[in-house]
Length: 246
Image 1 (cartoon, rainbow, N blue to C red):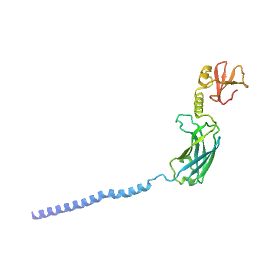
Image 2 (cartoon, one colour):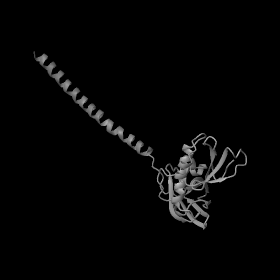
Image 3 (tube, helix red, strand yellow):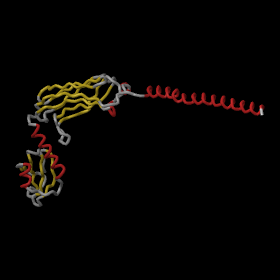
Image 4 (spheres, one colour):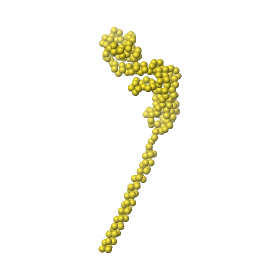
């Protein structure tokens, strides 16, 4: 019996010792994920990218005369880029027919220039703007190395005399022209009363390439468009921009 008790006590002590060792291993196992997460966090922080700061574009516009505006465009992006330079009527609604002009301009080593003919733009307040788009604006490796990934823009107001017409008149004409373009096709009914009530009187001018007993040219000053009409069928043959008939 004494021998059996000794064996039992020995076995019990062995079990306790084993459990202690298991507990130590378990603590080490629990601490491992915390320790392992530190390099992961460091790696994550290293891989995080931030858009570069300090890069910009700017535009300065001035009227050379009533019909020309000169723009000087600058940027802090190195190398060669292209951006969109524009002159647009201020306070246009998204669904308005846009009044303005734009073109791509190349900037080399931070500077570029453009001159716009504004003789056909109405009198009013405008915005001159420079817009850089990374999707197509980089023109060499030096500019790409800047890492710019978001669009850049700058604008400022300017007053234009332009054509001398009011912006309201031009906006209405653009809207009316758009209606004709979208709704009048070959064979559309020619209803003189409708056209007179909506667009005012027209000027008829001679037909030179067709039978004048059948075809008539009607120029609408309010539209700055010509309707060519088959008066025999009371149908529109075609419309044309400006005073341009058959």
